[in-house]
Structure formats: C-alpha cells, structure tokens
Length: 333
Image 1 (cartoon, one colour):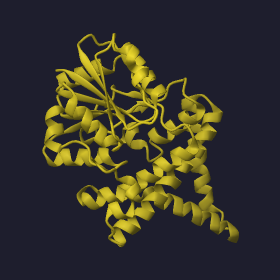
Image 2 (cartoon, one colour):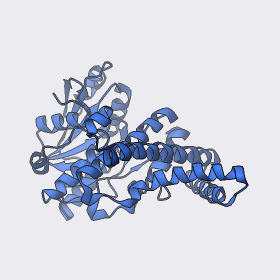
Image 3 (cartoon, rainbow, N blue to C red):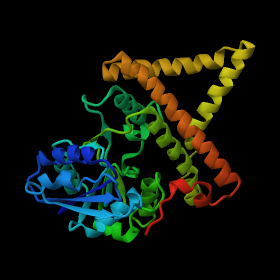
Image 4 (cartoon, rainbow, N blue to C red):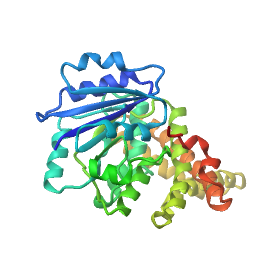
C-alpha cells in the first residue's frame, strides 16, 4: 500500500514548512509521497519547500483558487498512491502517525478514517483555549473528543484518510466549505463504504490564532449544518440545535435579571465555572482556563447564531443554499 499525503495550502508558507519538517522525522521507513496543492495563493510556498525535495518524495502543484475541497480532489487525482492521507496546512504530525495508520488498516481495513487532534506545548494560550473548546466533551467539540461512535465516525478533513477506490466512487469533496467533510462521509455511507475513528492517529492542530477568525469559522460551521440536514434529513439530529438553544437561553437569562430572577443565569455560571476548572486542570494554567470560557462562549454564539439564521433561510424560507449563503460555496473550474 502506497500512501499519498495530500496537503492543500493557501497563503501559509510558514505553516507548510512546519508540517513538512514534522513529516521529515516520521518513524516510517516505507516509501510514501507528499503532494502539495497551492490553491491560488498570492504568497506561495514553492520556494519554501524546495529544500525538502532531496529528502522527501514531494511534488508541488499550483492551481487557481477553488477552495480546499476541490484542491484535495486535485491532489488525489494526480497522486500515485492507492490510499490518500489528507492534512490541513496548519497541522503538525507526530512521529508515529503513518505507522499507526498502517497498523489499523492491516488490523481492520476501512476505506475512510478520521483522526483526532491535540495541542502542543508550543501553541499560544489562545490556541490551547480554542483547542479545548473544539475537543472537550463539555462543548459541541465533543465529537472530536470521542463522543461520536467509533464505527460511524465522520472524519474531519484536517486529519483523514480515504482509499483511491472510495475517492473515485464518490468523486471526493463537494464545493461547500465548511461542511465538505460530513457531506463526503454521508455520501460514502450511501455508497456502502465504512468510516472509522483511528484514535491513535492524531495530529497537532494549530487552528485559528485570534478570536475574530475563530468566531467567523464557527459561525460558518453553524450555517452549514442546516444545509447538510436539508440534503440528508435522515442524518439530522435535534442535538445540532443545542448551541442555538444555549445562546438564546443565555440571552433570556440575562433579560430575566432585570426582574431579579436569578436562577437561570446561575446555571450558566455553574457551567462556565466547570469549563474554567476542567480546562485549568487539563492545561495546568488558570489563564488558559479563563481563555477557554471565552472560547466556549464564542463557539456557542458563533455556531448557534449561524445555525439559527441558516435554519430560517433554508428550512423555513426554502431558499437555495447557494443563494442564501454564497460565501459557503466555491466555484469549481
């Protein structure tokens, strides 16, 4: 089995260097290739990766900007391997990653897998707080934390693998972003392919580095969910509405304070205190615990408001997704 590592990149030459440096020291002696797909960047990484070509089997392609999903598809079309490993450019790969993947595939083969993510000590405090919000069982990030069934896992495109056979049968990622990864998972299920979580095949995911970018990202996640639910109603869940319910309840609790009704806000206070304590213990830092409360609030607010707006437009007003949210769709050329 030949692995092809597919990495789309957009204006992040420094990050891609850090990722490739981590691949350079993998504990994996079998041959594999790396395919870099530059998605119409104005600041390219071509020169930055030249110095790795003598040490790694690495190829570089530049294409017009059509989004990460289409760039991954492009990379898989030109790749030589029969199993594709897909990373985001802001990931750092542990030494044992490919060895763990090979072991899992040999033990119990599956045509598509996903891995989890973690934070390195070198990450900033905000990155660690965002990582907590995106992975903790106490937040909507509990999916990545392991609450999703191992054998019905929806791989996330920052860390996933897919066989050449499954890619060709499904035509890969669609043009929605974000949301292209659960869309692909569901289409694979409908085609009879299985997906699974490889819990030991994790990556260090740097994520967004400031609050504004994080808020925009989770807001788009919220907008994408009702669109996916309209496409695949059989996979819709009431729990997807929870962040919206949470944030509406918080607004209502603050309003009730005007009438000296205290008990609703008390429950929210207990929740955020629990977030503070758990994150402080996990990260061994009161500062990160405090920042995690901010991250979780922004996560719920961004996702919840995005979901509500999208639900109204898609479910109630019956607008076409591409018309309602053109910013979520790339034009494939």
